[in-house]
Length: 154
Ligand code: HEM
Ligand code: HEM
Image 1 (cartoon, helix red, strand yellow):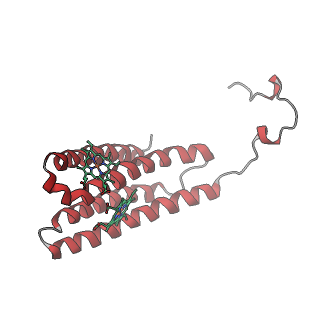
Image 2 (image 1 turned 180 degrees about the vertical axis):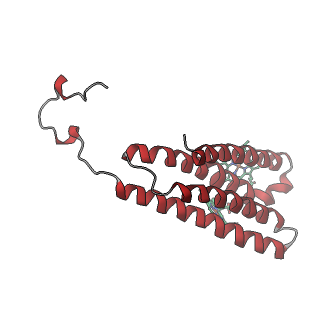
Image 3 (image 1 turned 90 degrees about the vertical axis):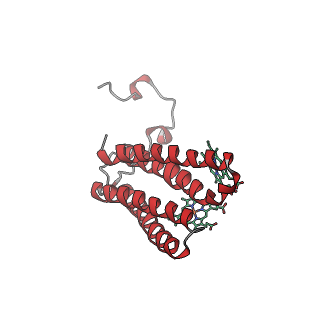
């Protein structure tokens, strides 16, 4: 498994743990529900999107039988997504305490997070460009399949 795939999967699990911890803190101490935008982005952008990114970077080259367009861009995406989300979540937390710092954190974190998302979309889009588009044998078959139609055993 490629290093950036393992990193994305581990980061997703770490954001899951951090996000649900904040969720439990909010459930126990309802005044902290002011932090729910940090909680939901840790879980949706951190856990859900990073898990999807890690799985997609692993399976899409295999589904399409073509290498990932840019492994370097995927590694860069990992850094941008995690630094971006840390700043964004930090901004969502401190905005109730210091508005100026929060504006910088939200601006920088939001921009980095969005840049990471564009990198993911571009990289997978270009990978699909290189994919061989072949009709499935099943869809073009007009007669019942026979044993001889099975792919040869390796
Ligand atoms: C142990 C697990 C979790 C706990 C204890 C928890 C707790 C909470 C609490 C207390 C709120 C605030 C509700 C309010 O504003 O009154 C909240 C909001 C929210 N949580 Fe969680 N949460 C958990 C897991 C998750 C997960 C896994 C996700 C998504 C993958 C999630 C997504 C959200 C969203 C989207 C909101 C905002 C809902 C809204 O404002 O309409 N939570 N959560
Ligand atoms: C570049 C990435 C993203 C940025 C910069 C961003 C930023 C924001 C901001 C500024 C808000 C308004 C918060 C407020 O109420 O003051 C918001 C709300 C929200 N975002 Fe995101 N977001 C991003 C990605 C996502 C993704 C990927 C998801 C879901 C998969 C998501 C789900 C939500 C939801 C559900 C709310 C509404 C929260 C509520 O008011 O209950 N966001 N986002």
